[in-house]
Image: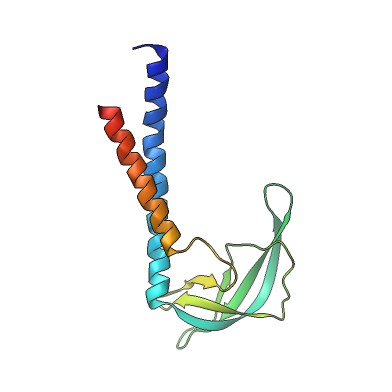
Length: 139
């Protein structure tokens, strides 16, 4: 086995767990999206705070913290995992889709993350790539 084959084998061996891990993450995200799609309920939420941060390149990002009170439950406060480039007006109310079984699991309207289809497609692509690498690695 020459050095080119050794490098090729090492790259394939490193890509298998990477593809497997990314596809698992995508399937977990797809499951969370599916649960919100099936069980989620919409409710109005009040912006109670805004955290300012920056992305890796120094551009500002604004993350709203919202509060809402589901029926038969205490107030829930959640910070968005997705930020925006421009400041957020605190007087604005947002619609929030939350999971009644776990009210901290929310999606804020207008603060999008990858959806169900995107996550499923990424999971299938990552799993297919991992299987293809294993087959190629073994043969």
